[in-house]
Length: 253
Figure 1 (cartoon, one colour):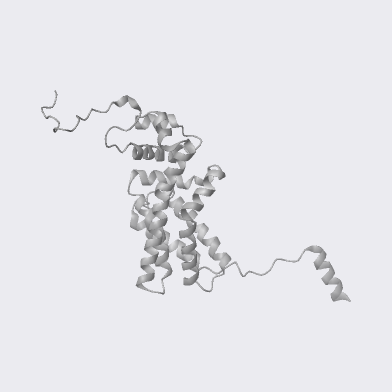
Figure 2 (spheres, one colour):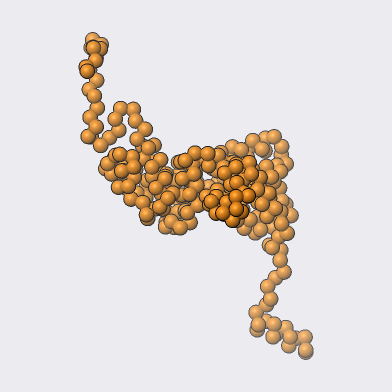
């Protein structure tokens, strides 16, 4: 059925876009749809286990269109990761700034809570959960891909939170803070991405799908670890055997 609407005088009629050109039709979100499908596939199967063909099939586009938008599989993976990771980092910085504006002496629990909140919000969407799976397995991806991505996305915000934690815990050695912040990241990623295991172990007593329960448990665990007695100022290691023998000779002399 043809439209009875005629083009305005002096304006050419708008031709209906053809679908076989390998490009988006009209005003399309195809680029975001490719990112969404790739996020799920990369999260489920990892970088090596995912092919552009599978992503193309999932989004009903050609592989040529994917390379038109992103270039290569590696570049697509990078864009998938950075799309949410940069947002997480930005949100963490914004929340930390808000804390500091309210009070110059920021409490440790509030610091930890604001660090977790952006990632916790992601669990509410399918794509966000896929990203958390992708993120949790990032350490298994090729280091030439994962290391630069992690640094680009998180270095600035991580250093800001490390500084805030050190200010909140002035008596804790720097070496302990660095270790504990790294362990904090591992703890929340595991808790966010492996909820089924917790349900099995607890025989249903724990509900990792309850955001309030998850946040409360994580904050308590992380704050307790950050405040624990430090290992950074532990007793020095025993001297090597030759040094001990020399010291013993001096004592006997």
